[in-house]
Length: 145
Image 1 (cartoon, rainbow, N blue to C red):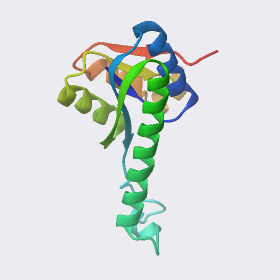
Image 2 (tube, rainbow, N blue to C red; image 1 turned 60 degrees about the vertical axis):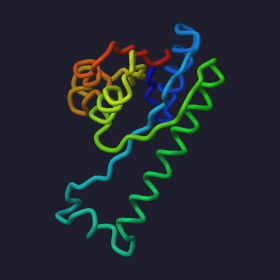
Image 3 (cartoon, helix red, strand yellow; image 1 turned 90 degrees about the vertical axis):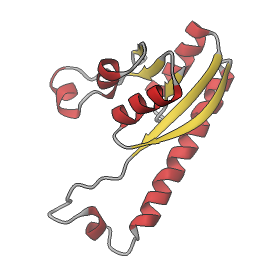
């Protein structure tokens, strides 16, 4: 089982629901990260973040992702899972699908923020992209009411 975790209330709820439905087992708790490479105000991000070497920014992003994955694994353990933290790099949906493929996941669990309509189409839906491209079934847990 691959559980996606970004630290949000929706992701915490997804772990709780996965525990209630699945009752435990081996799981990988994945957090993803990526550096933006788009121009900011006409400047590349490396020029925008003057005085901060990009290597330091990348290291900080990876460390934050590792901490979030570890926090998510701890929450999963509290729900009865044998959880191992993992980090994926790149756009979230792609990193989730790639990890599911590489690790032979039998199920992906992902929370939903509940964005629909215009907001969902403007922001994009990671859960929808994962459903469309994952190599296995996907359990999308709706945001708590």
